[in-house]
Image 1: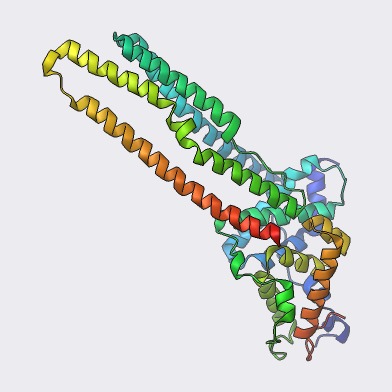
Image 2: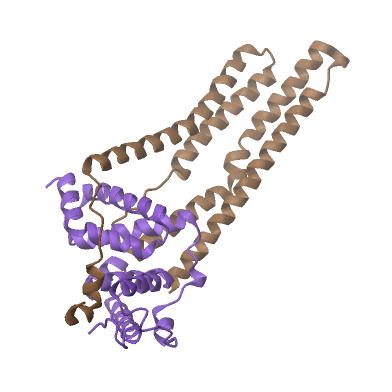
Length: 198
Length: 172
């Protein structure tokens, strides 16, 4: 039977809950930390590798294609990729939030971070899509000229149509995904606002 | 004392409290295990910059509560609309069954369920109160004024007294 004094002390009952032996070791924590860092590095590598690939491909086009417009388009696409790498690094990289500040401060910083990420998503058309437009446009006109120069009036229109449809499709997909992401972030921000107001 | 030593000390001193905290906040066993692991990892990381400007206990609880907040936000919305405040619980009719919550284990279950129903800052204050932490330190951890903590503790005592008044544990 529970002793009277303990029975009447809810804090003692709370503190006396059975706990599992601690299986977490410093070695295990270090291994997890390394795994986490590796995951972050891998994600960043993927982000930048895609843009480096674009730069390499269109850098090669400058030498491969004889058309001045295609060369100019390639240059503009490379410039867009470089701009995007810098933009992602400065504006869209993850800002770690210190975990040892008070809960309400943490929530405020969390909200700021979500708002920053949301701003990046909302303006994706400006920094992620618009920079490609001049390069793709000029490059496409260059393809058209090259085809006409080579094949004359028999030059097919479908390569140009294909580039245009693919570009519009990809752009629309990116926009839809980012609008959806922005709305999801807004729901979280709204929750945090209610929490901060309490 | 280096980072690993500080972490070992923190776990030796507050490991059981972290388990109690996680059990109170997370009902799902798998999520609970992941959350506890995540708290330990973040605690170890954070202790690299621990400069003893606050107590180790305050630091540990801050990290734990903040990791929990991130965990909830990542998984789903905070479900804040369905949560209750301490004030609402304190004013609600007493629906407890003294025979059901008379046993210690049942009391613990009831406390966890109550904490899970509360809005996050109220849930945190209640957890920390049950861990026997002083109001000033709770204010430091949660980031609300000591006066607001005192008001919440008063409501917690009202709720506990009402729930356990007929034969169950009491907070006296």
